[in-house]
Length: 519
Image 1 (tube, rainbow, N blue to C red):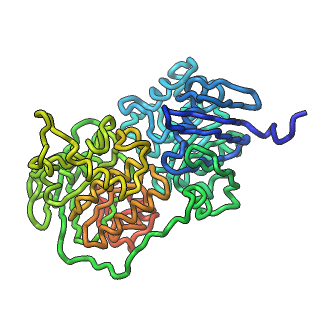
Image 2: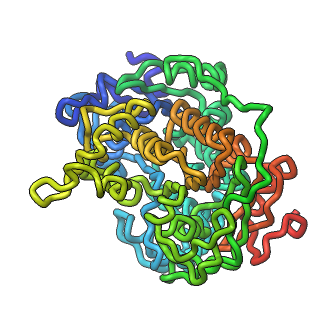
Image 3: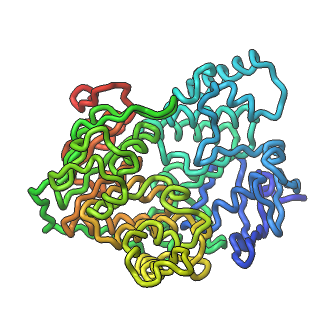
C-alpha cells in the first residue's frame, strides 16, 4: 500500500543530470511538487535553474534521471509532450507575435483544433473567470507588458495545466500588476494547480511560496519551508556566505556642476512597434544617481539609443556634456569624452556571443589600441592587444568562467553582466548610463553591481540608472522619474516619491506625466 504522502505528490523528478561537454549543469537533482503547491526555485546565476526547467518543459532532454506525474513515469521529449502531460510554462521573455491579435497568438500555440469563433468565446470566459480581463481581438502590439503576460497565462490555462512553470514573472510588472498576478497564482493554487515559481526576488518567494528548493553549482542543496525562513537565510543558503549590505557614505556630496543634460529631445519611432520619444528633458549633476523607472516597451530602448550615441540626435544641442553639445557625436566619440553605456540586451548588443571575452573587449575599445604595437598581425587586426585588460576585468569583477578567455555565450547571464559592467567601469567614466544592470541576476551579483554604481557616484561620477526594478531605483537613486509611452515625468528627489507613486506613473495612460495629476 502506498504511503499517504505519495498521493499528494503531483510532480517528482529524481536524479536529474545534464551536462554540456565537460560542464555539469544539473547533478543528481531531486525535486517533488505537491498538488496545489506553490514551489519556488532559487539559485545564483549559473546554478542550473534554467537547464532544469527546460528539461521539465521538454526543451532539453536529461542525460539521466526520471520524471513522474501522479506517480506515473513520463517521457517529456518536447514542449508538446510536456503540455500533453499537463505542464504549462510562461517564459521570462514572452513568445508573442506583436502583429497578431491575442486570439491569433493563442490559436498558434494550441495543440487542439478549435474554431476561431469558439476560441474567442473561451478566451472571454477564462478572462472573466480568472479576472485577467483581456480583449481577444486586440493586437499584442497595443498591450502593456502586464497585459501580454495575461495572454501567456490564458494560453496556458486553455491547456488545463496540472503544473504551471513561471520564470521570473514579475521582472517587468508594476507593483499593482504584481499584486494582481499574486492573486491569480494563489487562486490557481487553491484550485489544485501546482506552480513552480522561479524568481530572484526573495521577498516574493516568502510571500507566495509554500516550499523553496535552492540550487547551487548544479546541485540541490536545500528544500525549505518558505513560511518558516527569512530572506536573509535564503540568500545566505543560496550564496554560501553572508550577504553584505550596500555601503552608503553619509559624506557623499553632490557637485553643483552640471554633468549631463538632455534638452527637448525627440525621436520619431521607426516602426509600428517602436516608441516615439516626446520632448525629453533631464539634468544630472556629478555625484548624482538619477533613476529612470518604467515598464518595458515604453521608450527605454529608444532613450538609451539616443543617450549612448547609437542614434544621432536631430539637433546637436539636444544632448550636452559639461555644457558642450554632443548630439551629433556617435557612440565611439562619446566613449572618448567619458560617457559609458550598458544596453539592456546583453547578447548581440553588449556582446557578440560567438567571440571571446578578449575579442569583445577589443571591439568596445579598439580605438585605444589603433596606435599600439602589433595592432596588425599579417595585415589582420590583432585582438590580443586587449588580453591583459580583459583578464583584469574578469579577475576584478569575480566573473566565473568555465575556461580561460571563454566565448561570451559560455557565461551565465549574471557572470556576463558582471563582465559587461566591469568593462565599462575600467574606463573610469565621467557619466555612466546603465539600462537594467541587474536584470535577471542573482542577489549576490545584484548586490555587487549595485555597490559599484554607488561607488561611482561617491567618486563624483554621474550615473543614470534605467531600471524596471523599483527596489533598485529606490535603493540607489538620489532623484527619480518615470518614462511612459515615450514621455518623461517630472524629476523629483527620491524621498518625495513612494513605490506606489512610481507604479501609478508607470501605468498611467497620459501624455503629460505630472505626479500631482496622477495621484
